[in-house]
Figure 1 (spheres, one colour):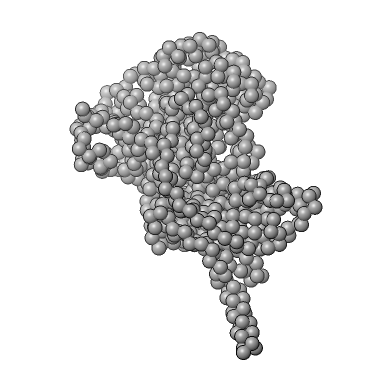
Figure 2 (tube, helix red, strand yellow):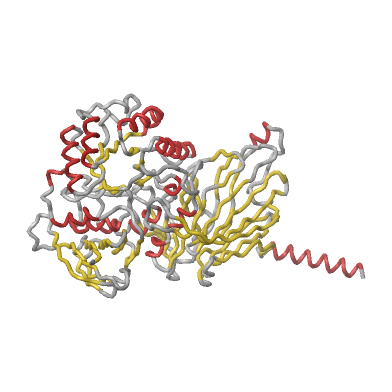
Length: 633
């Protein structure tokens, strides 16, 4: 009997080994469902041909695959710390190859919170959470959790390292989180944060691609890869796997030095039935960041801003007068007000341009217009502790960081530190050039907006403009620097007008290349005078990435709508079902009109509408349409 049992056990173990060699699941770790039950994430371990373990996950939506079998792995090299502290040196090739599963802890969160400002005044934070705890077989002091959150909007996961009892320091050399996509998936790819977008198959990329990265799946669904809570870490982009077909992999800018306990940034897979749904679901990135850490926030005030380019006292007063007349809340002194910006040998505590700063600030206060200052990286690094309190004393409202360095752990931490220092001095922040947010606005709402976008500084065409809402703007507020009068624009004026509703930025730059003297008080400027920069509700009325987009946003009782097309003329049917049931609205229409008497060729019309109304609009090539819905009393 004992011999038969032993033989049976040997056969069972041999079969288990053979199955594992064929790559079958050796241990199911956890199955996670989203609160609405539509998303399903499965996590499990397998053995490779060498007998090493690997951790995998899959993701599906209504039983349709989104992420196929994808490996979760992170690479660490702690040998110098281990040698220095007389600890056992870990010699595994992959950090996760000898991970022993300990337990799974699950929980559910169903809450709401109110941001200081945003695209919505109330944000749901609802998800199913699981933490898978592991320890390395060769050294139980090395423990790691894989933390997973499954929202109705998508999946978020990260690696978390509890405290090491021996005090070993950690050096992350790579993060190899995979996203294996169904055959035929295409990505909306740009090589850098201010680059053009291309729709590419998952092959032959020249470099890693920026985040967020929307993906068009061949099964008709949409996904978007993103990064959230990127704090004290190296930036993660997305690159193609060198060994696996149709597979994207996290690509770090460089190494990370860390001390336990700590967690990596969240890797996010947003899911939608349309590209527009991805925009409406982008609160997931804010939800993955900590709550507001600024106690007193009454000085944080969103608004519209115009750049002052003459760098003179009179030019500033003219800009303030124009701002007050057109309901703009701020003016900006752009670079060189304190001298050459791209050098260490300058002093951002001194006004070099012929600007009487105290007089300008005082004049702005009389008119209800605040002052922002551009400061370049060199002066920010050299003088932050000096100039931030000084600017507060001057009465400055915000700082635009220029030409920031990005990517490395060092510069990531520096940016976060600078935002905190600004908060301590009641200064709002706009970060320009290649930097993109990952939800930080929730934690430090004095970070109002950021560039990381190919906007009107480069004057892109209309096709690029209607790609941005489905790409860069999924990641959060962006400073596109909208223009109106300059002959550099490659679109109609109604297209530019509509941007103020389509593009979200709590500090919204208008008239970027324009001068107050160019304005002829065109009647359509009413739309920009009336429109706010933050919202109670946001709806994607219609849109196809790279073709057209219509956004409707509510502030109080009024709605503002912007519709834009690409380089092709088209008709669009606008459904006003987003309006409140039982209420009537005056719809003030602003549209391209060749018969208009102004040089901008924008026509105006007012009609009465309600939530049952529909409107067919004719959009010129590179054209647009704007509507202000004023509730009828």
